Amino acid sequence: MNDENLLQSEVLVSRREHAESWLRETIERLAQKGINWGRANSLFMYPFVTACCGMEFMSVSGPRYDIARFGAEFPRFSPRQADLLWVVGTISQKQAPILKRVWEQMCEPKWAIAFGACASTGGFYDNYTTVQGADQVIPIDVYIPGCPPRPEQVLDGLRLLQNKIFQEKGRVMA
Amino acid sequence: MAQHVLDKLQARFGNVILATHNNLGNETALIEATRLREIALFLRDDKEMVFNMPIDCTAVDWFNKREVRFEVVYHIYSTTHKQRLRLKIDVSENDCSCPSLTLVWPGMNWHEREVWDMYGIRFIGHPNLKRVLLYEEFQGHPLRKDYPLTKRQPLMEMRNVPEVPTQIAPPPSVLNQP
Image (cartoon, rainbow over all chains, first blue to last red):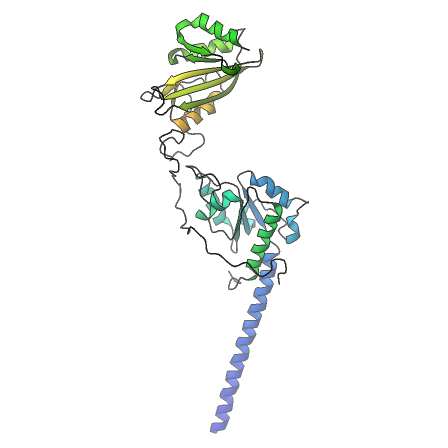
């Protein structure tokens, strides 16, 4: 085998490697896109309702505002079947370990939304009994302000979360 | 409305009724703690009284305003005669206890537990005097005026959250997602 042939075979190998990595990346990208699309549009939610915001949550999930239009159809009443935790209402110090435990029972991938002023910051309850925001207990993805928030705000918050899910990378095999 | 109740109480118990007033139609009797249960039984069982419904039990903290710091307040109602009555008992800070009326009106059970929870007033003779709203690990009684307003006693370690969370720029258009 002369030098020229050797050189040519090296070029071929490198081209082949390049093609393989390109193929792998493309498949991963497409798979990520497809999986993100599926995850964003079929959020199974777990409503952790502790206070009056629950009424507004019922309104959002009822037929008039109909959160099911965005794929968040089904409230699951076991955290083990859910992947979106709605923290709806005031979290008291006594409630905090329960919230943490509910969050830990959920399977990856999972997201959390703080619904209303109390869940986001503690609201106007700056006293001995209230946790100043559910993010002191679990990581929160989207904060929805309002006391209580309008259903439109809630839907906007859900769309924000969906957009975040669409932009996710590296969580394919999470 | 129920002035005759106060009159009858005073006629029957005399000096045990320390004071009465009828401010804005709220008949109130200030009572000596030692004979509270006897008076309560009379109010429940006497044919002209029949105060058969416990409405509420609460307390007032007169921190730095009165010599006797606490005041326990019972609200009762008669469904037969449609009349209301308030009973008040002074409770000093050193003693901090009051006879329980749970045996007279079982409905007072949780109300008295709440007063114990929030003010730390012990009810003598209560069958199950423990905290009703707060957790057992809580130190102190939060509705006392000398409890610091924002002193928190978390049950678990809190996450470290920065005051201002990192702002993520919103996507160009939420409505036109890919």
